[in-house]
Length: 188
Image 1 (spheres, rainbow, N blue to C red):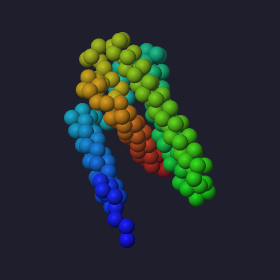
Image 2 (image 1 turned 60 degrees about the vertical axis):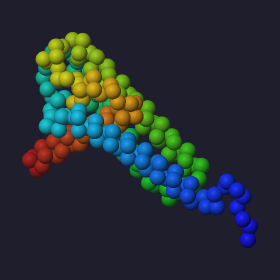
Image 3 (image 1 turned 135 degrees about the vertical axis):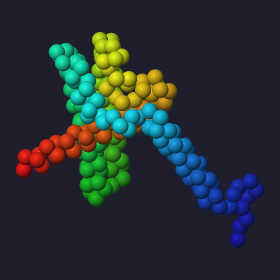
Image 4 (image 1 turned 135 degrees about the horizontal axis):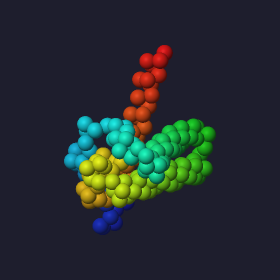
């Protein structure tokens, strides 16, 4: 039996478990930060779809504002579609692709989803800029199209903002879908 050389651990599992523990700790910290953000800044009583309707009502007669608000809604839907498409294709590919082919597909789908997410973020920024430049604070709720305090939102890092916007889009589309289903069930 050979002895391990000095200063080299005999078990690599100790290093791996320390690394795993550090990663879990970092992930928990990020989750705690996002939870803090949501608790402090998202208005649980205001529904996202109601906010969109409120903005559309305030901007009646302003074709540019209406177009920008509709664009945000469209971008949110495209983002949700990109997530669903990627998840579906990845699930199927697990059984048909291996190794580098699977990795390439996953990376390609993630890049596409990320680009669509970027377009959503840009559409929100453009819409908010237009609304804040053309309407008073009394007319446009704090945070603009998002139910997020703009100044506080800026204090969070890019990853947290991206996640918050992605979650907002999911909630918005879920609200639209629930409303649509409630309406169609009344018709039937």
